[in-house]
Image (spheres, rainbow, N blue to C red):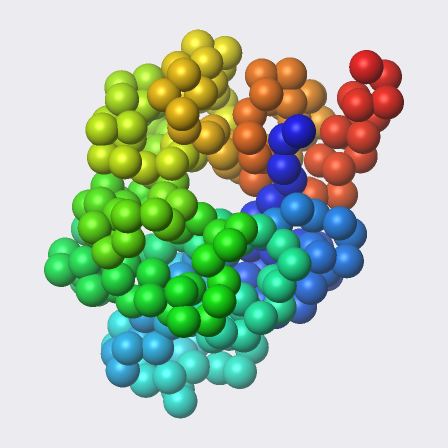
Length: 232
């Protein structure tokens, strides 16, 4: 059955990518959450989508002590997510000043997951192919998902992901069709789709047997999946 992951937690009444949002996702029965990891100037892993914190500064130029308390550390986030799956997206964009081409950030995330005892149920993802490759190089067994740019045809990426030993592809929902899902599954890859917020699209993807739906509305996704299951 398709898993439901809350995109940046359940952030209807609380801030996205916060401990509160992850706990809210857990409280409504989401199977997991998707969260975004960045690194401060002194090497701390924190949870934030954008490269900069509004009114504070660019994360890669800040020390951990300068980060507002509302921004979760990686440890705080993973602790809040105990009992759920976690899609750990590494934010590492070659167009951003803080881009890490060395693989050190990817390795640090792998080590942090392992030392924290959070490997089980977790998958590391990134839009940056080199970062996904660095994760696989750092650990031959950890789950790795390649996030696919919505602007590009995802079909050729399936074989590329398989050849690199990844375990999943993460296509944009409007780019996901039966041929893509079948090709990925034939290669032994999971298909984890982002970001699906409408019941009609959720139903279409459930019918395609995707492995995970990542959504800003996990309550709707759970209700839609339950209704589909009960009518089957």
